[in-house]
Amino acid sequence: METSKVKFLERTLMGPGPSNIDPRVNAAMTRPIMGHLDPEFLKLMDENMILLRKVFKTENPLTFPISATGSGGMEAALANIIEPGDRVVILVNGVFGERMADIAKRYGAEVKVLEIEWGKVFSPDEVKNFISKHAPIKMVGIVHAETSTGALQPLEEISYIVHNYNSLFLVDTVTSLGGTEVNLDQWGIDITYSGTQKCLSCPPGLAPVSFNEKAVEAVNNRKNPIISWYFDVSMLRKYWETGERFYHHTAPITMNYALWEALKIVEEEGLEARFERHSKLSNLLQNALEALGLKLLVEKNYRAPMLTSVLIPEDISDLDIRGKLLTQYSIEIGGGLRNLKGKIWRIGLMGYTCQKKNIALLISALGQCLNDSGFKADINAALSVLNGE
Ligand SMILES: *Cc1c(COP(=O)(O)O)cnc(C)c1O
Image (cartoon, rainbow, N blue to C red; front, side, top):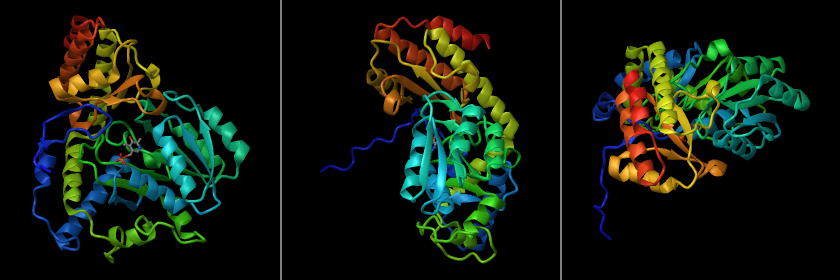
């Protein structure tokens, strides 16, 4: 069989991740490989931890990238906290909440799921009622930015409730980190995991995590060893956090270079400026989509700035339009998952991809594809929204 058929194409990545990466991050991955115990590489690891604490807004010593994708971060967080028989609550309003519940069950937890309509966010009251019905609970898990719907969940009040019931608060910040405010210490988030390929604009492959003192205590007080060897933070911290530099597994050197460069870029831009860019440009995208004549899934106040879900108009083929965007314009957008399959498109504006020129490109291309399919998209109105800005 022939094996030279692959084409490596330059795509505009406007789906739910991965996002495009800054050329500097690309260049960082061509740097020479050092050993994972080389004193120079150890310096880079230390700096990655310092830079990650800044984006997470935390003082947690145990903040480092797990060698895995975001789902690996999810599994690591749950594996370390959950012991067989522990009762946990998982709040589900999309695919990633579902995945959290699935993993928690596999690690032996008694999982209580509160599920609401996808695209909506949880109110503090409904969370409080649910927790009070099932207390005592070891941990409550929730997704900050649900990438399957584009809903952004407010966290502070829920965190307060969770702590009133003496539970640990676990938050998925895979899509939100680096694109909108995430404040671990101020919001009382005990455990979080993220990913590199969304708003940090680094390739997929690492999962930054952070455990606060209470979470570390929960790990230390376990009656049973952690079922997963690879994700056991009590061993991983001896390589990352302590001076021991105890060999656990070979850190993916190149990925750590990429993360270091990506985090330097975030630091140079400044977190607040970065959030402002995502917020301003996502508003612009949303206004332009509405001007085209399209409707959005999530209510205005709860839209995640890095991911917008658009309802697919009646009689328009999901696959046909996404296929044309990819082959004719080299733009990738995402489709809906599970019960939203065929019903929405998911348009990402994450990190390096979040630029006005990409919005203009997408709006013209999408408008053209829709018109070719018989939907009357008002491209002029949408472009004047972009120009008027
Ligand atoms: C992408 C994503 C994940 C999973 O990350 P992978 O890198 O695909 O394993 C988990 N949670 C959320 C909210 C995500 O957007």
